[in-house]
Image (cartoon, rainbow, N blue to C red):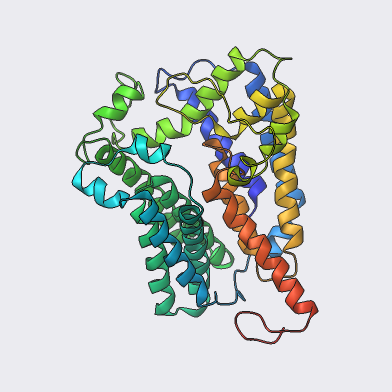
Length: 391
């Protein structure tokens, strides 16, 4: 699971198959350019994954991670309190009372404190989950619950899905050396349960009951196409997996090549949005959508709109180079496997948004790299790290 090259091939292979099933009328015939692009990059990723398999095999263990300093959860708690105070309400409470304004929540001005709260909680929960398998300390479970509780306050499914996916990667990594069929069954069961819960929560968030999927049936255009033997709650997952590709396909058909070259914003496509938006000449992505209510277009739409068809291949190369750099910086440190966990997550969620610009996905990887740098620095100075062990 740590081999993000294989993860790329798996994710985009599955999405292409699901898209071609045509269970939603939003899925127009896929452009030959996109078919060629994904076919090439999937094959290249398999080759690269096999070529560098030894690097990932050596980094499979998640043992040796030092404990997070006690100040870490305290800082996250303070950022959460300030961030929610700035927002003026607690989203999960409003959701329970049935009066949460999602449009207003999405339109709210960005807050450094809310960003730190969410990003820090995602990183902290995954970090503590990895440590738990080594120490089996009940205190780690308390810490995991603490971070997940903070994530729940914001009532955002995406943050939960990021955490659950990373937990799954850590779980499979831990048991990779003694893999048995029961673990495979557990992984599949967890994945299916998470996708079902994602749909049930989507029904509730849309104002219906957990088993009322009429909202996604209408807006996802699934009527008359969805197989009767599959629970309707999975319709949410299907639309979320395939509609970004439908939007990318639509943008490719409507983009005038030659007038799309914006080198500045193409470079910004590899930076976290929280950083890029304060840099000169930054402009928000103006992607065209098949329907206005499905507002994401995968990682590739950024590259397409800013640099044309060439941007697709350059974007693929840029992503892989950035992840290679993260692995290189974290080599010979306890954080390399953690970096690969978040690299895998960035690749896995690239079907939905640009993982390198979306804060909840990009910052945990950057934090892992930063910890690696601090570890190397402490080692060179022969001083102790957070765990108070001599290096």
